[in-house]
Amino acid sequence: MAKPAKLGKPTDQRMAIIRNQVSNLLWNGRIETTVAKAKAVSSQAEKVLTIAINAFGDTVSVEKEIMNAKGVKVKKNIKQDGPKKLAARRRIMSMVYDLHEIRSEEESKRNFEKRTKNINHPLVEKIFTELAPRYAKRAKEVGQGGGYTRVLKTGPRRGDNAEMAIVELV
Image (cartoon, rainbow, N blue to C red; front, side, top):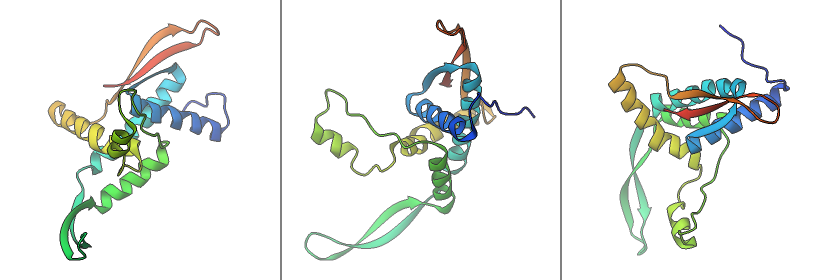
């Protein structure tokens, strides 16, 4: 098994760089970086997606009594994360940074607040609601897990001649 690249940084700095780039890759779907960082980011992103794919379907329906506006107790069914999904969510939160939603220019402040009202961790929500189901479906069709990222070499960078690559979600 090959050793992970040290990237010429102390461990805490190296892990912060990789964590930041993995977060941006999962949020945007594509980043450009050096080849060594691209390989490290690709490996880490695959691990995050595998954790999410294995746990995204674990939900539990719970019945709770809630007071409505008139002061009457009403029973309501609420979908919550099961224990497997909750553990996976917490593990992923330790592996990526929490990125925030950005309001588009056409979107009003009221609509933006309404859209993001109940979302505490937008990146983690995106991983579990968009990416995990998409890659689980892909794994079922292709018949294999993994291969969620692609590293494309683009040539040397102009300033320091470092070999550059694009990492993207497949």
